[in-house]
Length: 320
Length: 320
Image 1 (cartoon, rainbow over the protein chains, first blue to last red):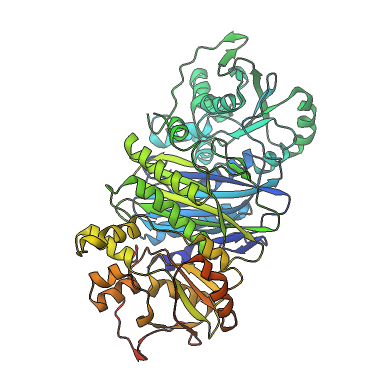
Image 2 (cartoon, each protein chain N blue to C red):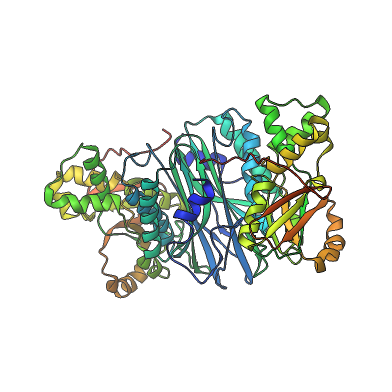
């Protein structure tokens, strides 16, 4: 099977169709209509076998995750997901693998109303790169740079579950039978907070998604906004599964330094906290206020019950 | 050096700046203003070490080529290049390599007035993926699907030089001293026909860029336009360097089946041939009319001096 047959069999004609796609897969480039008065938002995520996933991971879950982690970046900026480009590097053509990967990709793309509009297929070590494009009303994208002193810091959902899922897969942490499905789902099938991200457009002063872990990620908001942050680790939202599976210090460690939760981290000025409660309650997504933005630029304080919380961060970086 | 330091040192603040970039490198995504009344054009190209380039190739040339081959796809659609996203997978941090690669990338991006607006940096086998975005007045993108029976087939520049350059690098073909610089330049530093592509918007009925070789590439126009093509191999534009370095049959073979020329292949209806001559002469780019579109869908005829030209295509496909 050649490259073009592969593309037409697995990637040309599945998933969502959008009326604002003029030309999709099959030309030199895709041609897309960005609605007048809207900005385009573009994000990129690469997943490399051996670095970001196990080569024998379920390809359907990989297809899902590749879409979800890209769409999560769009969600964090308040954008409406629209289009996906896929650069797929494969060591060989394994039709079972491709068919399951494409199914996972297409069903998740359809769920988020994203159309796959092109890409490139090459031979080499297994690697998946996706570039997702979304749209947002002009000037309404939520960046990392708008946090101000006194803003309240929020996260969605619960933290640390995906990191526990990774440890379960690696065989370095036990999880009781009744929690395994939930924990593995959180690791293999993350959700992007798309509707919530859009609802935050006029409320949040800054936002980002949690991919590397709260401790590391919040420092991007601090750096871009030139502020500090104080977080009460007692307020970190922990799932029952996490609490039942770990001692309290480990649970906090996974919630702070474990990655891949794909929850939203955002800041809200005092004056808009009321709007937050009123407008967001219909979404049914748990929101937790975990701290405040401070004026000590670059300093991250961790507290518990008003005391300083001693913490040794062990983060993950590909190049250290 | 961590991922974020690497990005800020080599990729955050060089190259072209564009006033329609609201947010570039450093947030969850880039935020871009697509001019009202314009369509967005998106292309993707991946270059994998060992498949598309030699691991010890000059990194500055790789940075150049990655930009040029993507911009060439935009040019083929008549788009104005605007933004680039880079997914860079590296086995380790080699600062000399990175610095030369980034220099090649930035200088070429600047030449085409493209801004690098984000991407992802990961650890793994060396691989470079770029997604280029351009803009084109709404409805004016030139696709592969508009060729009609009787249209004249054109190519820009000369064909086969890059393929000869590859063979020279591989040590399988000799090239005399006086032609080596030209031939290696054509292979390592291809040009994208950006101004010409935009000038073709109201003239060409279909267009694409030549990346896999004329014989293989024209079949994409034939397939998407549901037509056939007849090409006179005697009219293929060959450089003096190619003619001096090869016997006539080999020269034609490289011009037909060698890839990576990044010239434009396009079709023009009879009624617009006059406009072509008048409007395009100021660009100073040689144009050659090499054949006609025929009604025999899917059939590619090769002729020389009105006789059928016997030809055995030996193309390149990553997955066969």
